[in-house]
Image 1 (cartoon, rainbow, N blue to C red):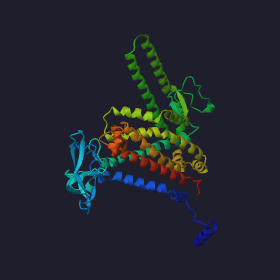
Image 2: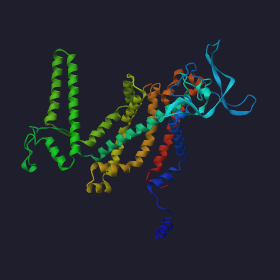
Image 3: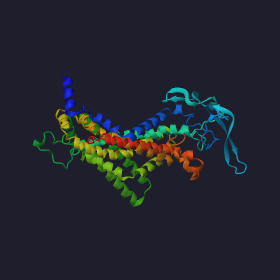
Image 4: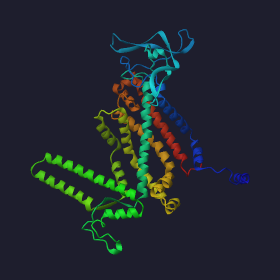
Length: 490
């Protein structure tokens, strides 16, 4: 029977029914540049993952007498023209007696054969598996009888080929991680903003009823005429118990009191500091202002009641963040961290947090627009009618409707974060020595000025990899945007 129906479908429609993701995959395959971009990114990430295996030298190993050595020349033929296994010659340092400049010359009296899959310096693969297997090298490399600098050395005599792939771990990873953190913040806050738009949230609930508030009439609700039972806190507690939202109410209450007590402590410390350096009339005026401010805060905690629209609170916060220039904020925050001697891992996490903090606002605004539309759909209203909680409706039924958009946004945001990290490291405000990133490695090229472009061009290789990674991500993001567009049927 099913064969008959299938035949009828094929004869009537001319093709089998396809899901949204199958059609998206077919549209994506029509972009040849995107497929090549995906392949290039896979290669880059594999080389970064296996950097310890691919790199001939450890990340921080340096040869102080071999600064700015040109890429090692690899020979495939002997002097008589016969093919042989690849080998290198030893590089020797000397100083020109006429110009007094350092020169590096090859001494091919002894040939050093390059072998593959050889033992070398020890490392921990993935951070915990002890290994010493390397892609290329030989005993001569460990004993330093000769050197293998495929892409030359930097100002400390470190192998640039090795450091590029170690630096790729930070430059390529920070884009993904920063995008994921910004995605979590943007989706969560944007979803809450859109779903609860029009709903008011109490940011102050006083313990006692305000004497300026008229006691409740009997028809408005029994038991609200007392100083405690008529307070905003008591009414909120009754409402939360009636709606079965007591855990969320108590959590919000804890956050509220923590905020007010923290604010009061900051005001108190500020007042003490200001009074210690002021005298005369200025001292009395300042004491009065601070006392009134503390009294007002105490009044709000005891008998106040302030409610604000959740949507207004979140969206105004994003607008304040958007009003601050991103690069300016990054430089200020990174400059504040530069005065502390932080480990490389800590600095990496802080740069990640800074980039995510700057980038979540725009995503939150767009997600809010989607949620405002999707919350009125029939399936969302049906879930609410069946008794589903707000969290389940938002993250199970509404947010998945934005999945296609989120994939495109992340793929297009990653190159921006890669470029931002590279710019910070280039300016000396991001990753610091002895760790490496592409931006930090590229900063070595600008130390020699325009002369470096002619005399040490290999130092610009990190910039090439920054360009390639950003270009491939942009190609991939454009293809995903076309493939995941439900209106694109062809």
